[in-house]
Length: 176
Ligand code: IMP
Ligand code: MG
Image 1: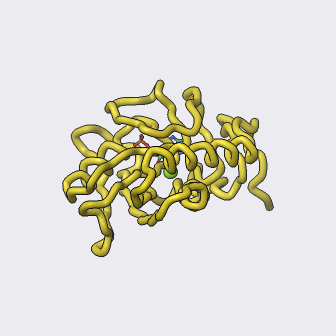
Image 2 (image 1 turned 120 degrees about the vertical axis):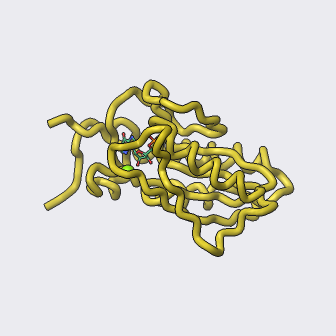
């Protein structure tokens, strides 16, 4: 049994690697002389955070948090719940939220609000993928790896029912 090639490869492993290196350089330039804390949103951003941390040429920390999404029931009336670890160090730090994909925007919006309430020195958002056609709530995206069409994608951390996260590339999931 293998989890390979659910559909057409949209973004190859090589393009992901090159783009993560570029994002790392951009962040390193923008925060020169500072220390940054990446705040990864589990589980989808795991590989992106891991690669981005190593592409940033600054003192860099990372934290990981979870967001509960209530399945398909996301709406502004019922925002995702952000679960902060008790020992998360936020106050006075330069935070960069790291997410796999900006879809409706509800997840990033909830994470931003929760973190901003804890008085960071600054807060930016970095996503690997942006699907602007699906946005329901506006969110500022400071660093974007790739803008994509409204297709369901998997790989490099992104799943469909917990499958395909381990693919080294991003693929379109064939509808069936
Ligand atoms: P949002 O709150 O609607 O922006 O959703 C963000 C979350 O939905 C992401 O962290 C993903 O877990 C999931 N998601 C959205 N689009 C896709 C996709 O194309 N493939 C896999 N997961 C997705
Ligand atoms: Mg997911």
